[in-house]
Length: 285
Image 1 (tube, helix red, strand yellow):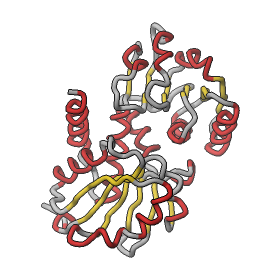
Image 2 (cartoon, rainbow, N blue to C red):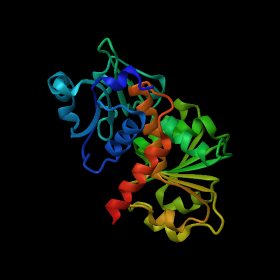
Image 3 (tube, one colour):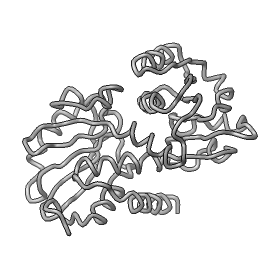
């Protein structure tokens, strides 16, 4: 039976810059359709750090007949910029100083959370990976810190992060200390060595790992490449082992966002994944 929420108009959206490529509208709209939330809409808005405060301040003006705002998904470069504009954030978001989900409560409070970390763990668990002895992280950006937070929960040993500068290395070691996980850093020129780890998480932009494709070991562990477009990456295409792609991460973190924003649990994972796969095929076709 439809919930009371499904009879009321609600709004949600993804914000970021650039944001035109985002799959979030496809995933969230698929969830609303599956859940019978006929009055819910999900849009995308191009918003950078300078425009974020003004956008949030003007949300009320954008409601109108479309309904009250339920939540926002945030992509780069807004995940840290939004924190001072919120009333509270979850412990998960605080652990990496990154918010990718904003939920508006009934009393008007803005609460921030991070679904990237549990989404990454859920994607790994879906493939039967609950613990690993050691791991490699390729890259040192915001997604890399989320990867470390996920590994802090499942990695029993050392994590090696391959970075392009000592400054980035210090940042990653600092995140490791904060998250309670041992992080060793090495120069990016040695990244091929890290491909022999039981779990390799690539958090780099498109093309950054293409040069590593020829160094893939004959028998590899699991590669978790956070990119989903273009897919497969050269590294994923060459990998001799299990591969988890960025769509897996995107879907699992979106499932958690839908649950937080709508109150419906569980969110329809299968329908959301099917919608995402169909959209990527259409883009490639």
